[in-house]
View (cartoon, rainbow, N blue to C red):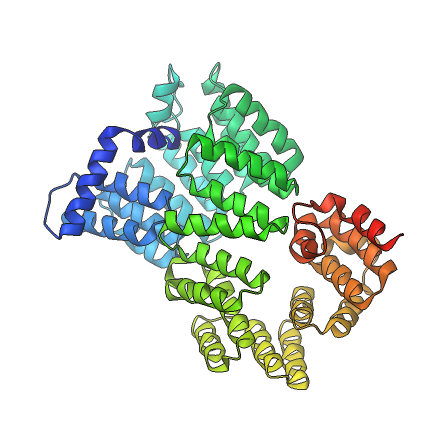
Length: 498
């Protein structure tokens, strides 16, 4: 079933009755019989709402009733890939599937395992062999409904979409070229996939145009509204992104992704009260998903609601297993930073220990040690840790920028400024785009705090040109809520009478 048709199905009386029956028996503790397909539909529904504990519970129950059900094993394998980043567990589940031959979903999951292992060409070859072996190069379906639900007929297009999801644009274009002749007169899916490819290639201006063309054909396409929202956000058109998210919510009020995008857009415009409201509502919908708790904690910290921020980051860390690996590290870093602000050094060290257990690189450990030292007013000790972090990473420019950001957050503006100026001195102006995206936003911020107005405007112009999104995150507090980065320079010049 296509995603669009699945969304329709979840609104149907049939599915709502199924969900109500399942939740009744789950809450009562009574045993009940459910078809495996029905349980997988419920798991998919929960997963769509980011209710990962509920998703895990229902898929485990399905495997308890049907231990060898291939669809359930594949679903759980995908959860390990997407939600936990655990390729090895996904492979174990895949190996337990008996009927791999001719199983399209199994072919997709194996390809995704290979992609997660950075074996892109091998994944492509695997799908090509499957395509040829099972003679899937046949004519397209006769109508849209058939096209939505016939997996075999959709194979080239589905593979194109799969590679698009992973940003493998070369492979996606190849498979899209295979699919296009099969869909003569039914080009909406092709148009949508090409639009997604533009987004993946970070050609966001062109992507906006393409997604608007999709919406001209299908104005109620909630996925297209969300993709348009994403392109607008990446183009730093935050007000437009909020409007697109609102259209998606009007079509599907339970669209958690739309609420997430809306909250992020508000945050980017320093509309912190509105962003907080979005994330609080999202917590209700997702039943406290740790990623949303992490986002809410960040917004609260920006508003100096430190104790409340700490409550929410602790909730995020409590369920850290449901975060992707990079978000696990981010949650622990934020937890450590907030604990330091609250003078809870023991808690900060506890989170640092957890990072070490999870195999965080030495540079991250030294950065956190430096943060803890700064919270205890140990500037000399902190600088030793920061220098160790930089040296451990071969003086990588990203680590230098992270050190500068930490110094900035502790109000050590001259030191952060000097470190950043030293960094950019080794680069010509044409090389600036190769530097970490927040470099010039940080330089603008430190210049402003130091009263260096000419440097402030100079670096502000570079920051808003090279990376408007980073500029909004670091500099939004200096401008009226709702201001987009494209207007920062003019406002700043008027404020300084330049």
